[in-house]
View 1 (cartoon, helix red, strand yellow):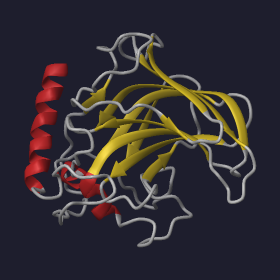
View 2 (cartoon, rainbow, N blue to C red):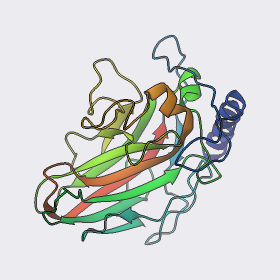
View 3 (cartoon, rainbow, N blue to C red):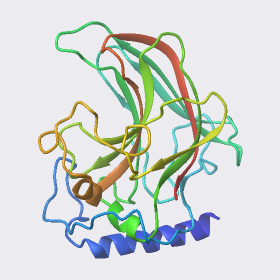
View 4 (tube, rainbow, N blue to C red):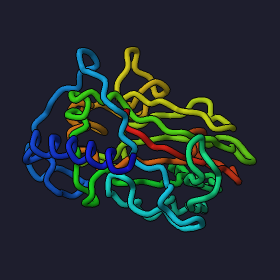
Length: 261
């Protein structure tokens, strides 16, 4: 499985890099180094493709940080706010629906009242290229038949309220910290496959990837067809989605079989 997944991903990434010979060159995450070829995503008339596994954690050592994913991209060191939040990320024997290992994330979201509001957050991200920060054109993936990302997951909300679980896409076309993201509306407490389409009719934060509802188009974020030309990472966030004042401890997120489908 790993061998054929690697062959398929290599072919897709080569296609992406050729299709945007400027936009996929290595560049800082703050902006493009040139003008990328923009291909609008199409939700119709694209053939389905065999799913490509991004990571299943089976090659990683238990009780350690995850190694490179199956695309060859590294996992970044976890990051968090500076207000009191704590976090940890280890590979565990929390068996998923396939295999014996999964990624186990833990977070205590802590942020007292501030003016202006400081949102508590904890982030765990994996690169989609063998070179950290190099972009892949997800519009090109869509044109070859990929429709989104799916994971197997289970969560524990811990003690307190106001926190949530988000899957975000980082991009070279990103403005500041505003990212296209998918919010998991009802966190499952037992292993469940969560399917996250890149696009969907009647767009909401719960049925596809969109910017935060408070963000302003053209000021805080670019259009999806532009943003998707430069995807660098898949990011898993445990974050305050409530008032900005939070003390929610013991939140956990078990993740397995991260897949492009």
